[in-house]
Image 1 (spheres, one colour):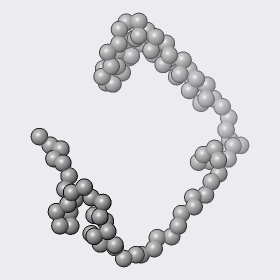
Image 2 (cartoon, helix red, strand yellow; image 1 turned 90 degrees about the vertical axis):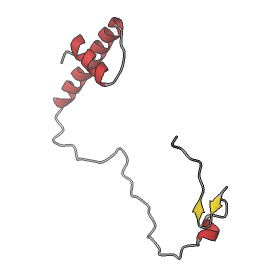
Image 3 (cartoon, helix red, strand yellow; image 1 turned 60 degrees about the vertical axis):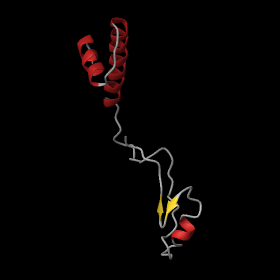
Image 4 (cartoon, one colour; image 1 turned 45 degrees about the vertical axis):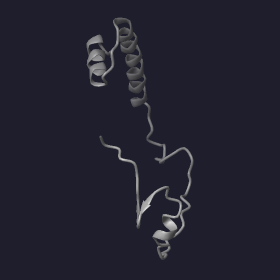
Length: 95
């Protein structure tokens, strides 16, 4: 599939990129090569290949959730730089 310079300009506009004419030509050529490669991949026969979710077959090793008592604000706020009773005080971020 061939990508035109006009299509590259449209993509650059959507991505908010400023490209000069030389860059547009180069990008059109590179995108065309990528799409030609994808077209080749569509022609590959994968009927006998088993589906997989990744290159390595791994099992997640997760521990079971355990219900625990909350340590309380004394422990959770012990290292807070500033606090107001049971709350963190953080710098204002909106002007």
